[in-house]
Length: 166
Image (cartoon, rainbow, N blue to C red; front, side, top):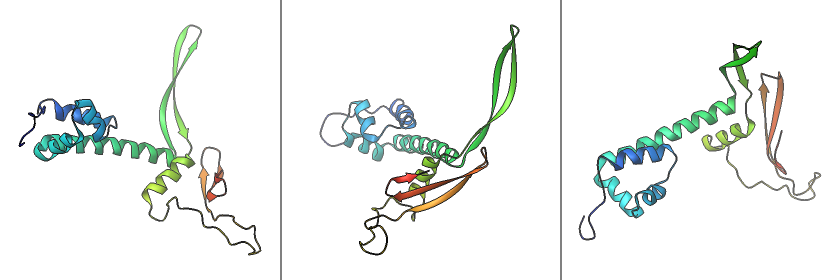
């Protein structure tokens, strides 16, 4: 580094902590604040110190992947094993069960809006007045998902006047 004060960078400390901060969802700006340095210093450390750059990248990728997996599971619904505990006549009993979570329509809409180019939150198209239908009403997209727990179908209307209706 030409000019300025010496760097605070410590190769045994900063990469490890930066990785953990990224796992917690911190941005580069927040990491700079945590280390009490300017954001430009973080970018400089990324250029100069490969281990620091790798730590930031790995931490962000791992955190983003875990969140994406959780949103995906919520969107499609999932099951997991669960152990329930009961006290019967002063004796603790356990029972293994399978808990079912139905699809979450808001998670599905969020997933689709972030992952599918044709599924974007766009300004609603307005129908011209006097076309025989209610004027000024926006178009919407409707999709139906089967709820395996209740054995029913859920219809989600996105983009209508109320944005979404279930």
